[in-house]
Image (cartoon, rainbow, N blue to C red):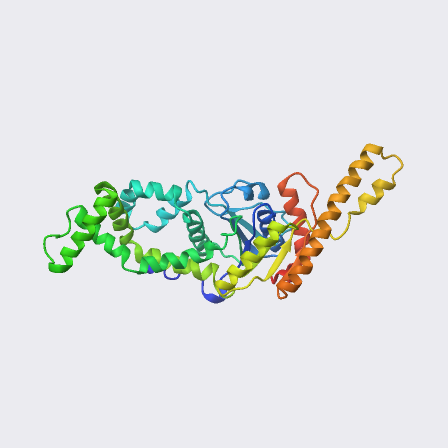
Length: 376
């Protein structure tokens, strides 16, 4: 494990971490990508990572992205760097296992053939998020970065990812994995289950009860799984602790992303309360599609004598929808100023563009002028 003790850079040289969280459909991934791009424009070496398996970040960056950090091409005039990481649920676990078991090739070969592992890597809630955070730690150890922007999954459980590493470390540092490891030895005939007095008798009783409930094959597979993990559990725990330190550290900033709707507002308050329970508080809130006023072209088009009645009617309808969003955004901003007075607010306009990369570029221009409001 010694080669992983200093996986993270020293405290003074670690990158700043910004975790973006919000409900679904509020433009969180686009905002995260735009924030990372704005920071790169300012000369920062920035990594943006998403744990959202919907793969929206690849569209936003307009470049192929996967489970290894990818350098995003920028204009040569940009002084900073932009990297992107989007762990693929189908391969992220294997990528991490390769890293975790790099000194245990035989144990790794057995692990990836274990039926319980095959189910776990595809189905267990939180595995993708947990592995994604671990891969961020590895990226930080390999690339000299100034800022890491983390785009969480679009749900009220988005912030669970910052607590997963610590909970896993507590499990790995406890006795359960070691107990299952010794159980694996007995399941394969390597242990001496005939001796040991009362302790051995108690273990046989527990193993017998498990076998009756789960079946002999299942209990053997589970025991073997934990047996392989027991070989690397201290290294695994160390990685988990470093992941926790990175994404839940005192210097980590949390930016909540919302849109002017009742559901998005409810999600925002839920996530703010969850941060409080974690002993943290949000730095700022970004309100997307929260235009302050109509774009100048609306009045120009409506005043154009050449505009057809159908075009004028369509523009008026769009303007009514925009005005309704503005009123909703005003109401949300006013409510937040009362309920969460310490929360800095930043309103971003609706971007009229079709390609996600064009939207990211336009939002990055907006954010670049207001990074101070986000505390970066």
